Length: 412
Image (cartoon, rainbow, N blue to C red; front, side, top):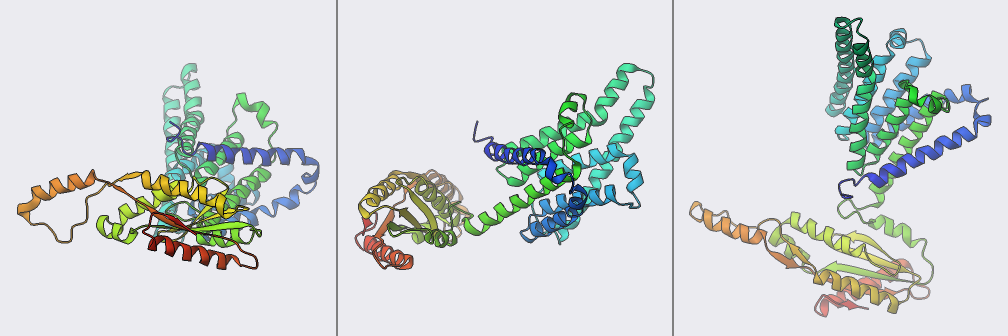
């Protein structure tokens, strides 16, 4: 069940972060109230900078949200041609943004300045058209049933509260089912927008504690900016395939090490032959499996993907003997695990039609095949007046010795 709600923890952390920011603003009202007018002039700059920054990392959904909030801000604070009409049609605005939330929760990030950006603009316009048609349908239904009190109550519910409930459920489920910062930030944005835009009698006590909309908008934008920064960090310092810290993260971590540490280099045995036999897709499965096993290392070890089929484990403040114990456990756990091959073995030549049935049987047999994977490990302890690069090279030489000794062993 927990695997289904894989975004639960991230959703909780994102919501908790916004709640903390909100309470901090409420507690410091004596400081920001005299400066509120000056602060509001900074909000468009914050929105624009966040939109550009998000677009730079192809986080176009954050950019679209920021640009939408920016347009709303100018509409509410300046006399634009459509400002008066929008003030008189607040229900349309509320529904349009609700539908926009749902739309953004289903689309993927694409480059903003491309054909995909034009498509997303059309989708945003479609949200406005859908909101207009919804209100028109409700108005028609209300006109046909005028004078009926029960129908009036249902019309009042259908007009805003029903879309609010359904859109909220969609956004909530998308946030819980997907481990995605955008989805969790979108859920927080929905909650804040609902509190401000929809007047619900049960929430009057909560609404009396709301901060000015301009400050709420600044908090939302700040959370977007923080989310893009976190995404950018993972993009730079995390390996996309294995989800382990990358080689760049290893170099950064090396700067924090003291004089006592141990470095191990690990390599998957015969990985090139494995790739040639079963294909790169199966090879990627093997890399993910090995990475998941290595990530469980104990004894204070930190695992990094060095490149290709090579990994690095660093034991800070550990000597060689302590590290050897943990590395032997890792080696054995991987050697004992059997991998089920989920696709047929590569064929050098295309089979003839007469052999179709035979190939099908062979493919079925290969698809159920299990294979074992082993790793070789070279480990070195940091010596006096030795740099991290030199210690890393020493462990790489020990890895070469491990392969020379027959592979599937730990050498130092």
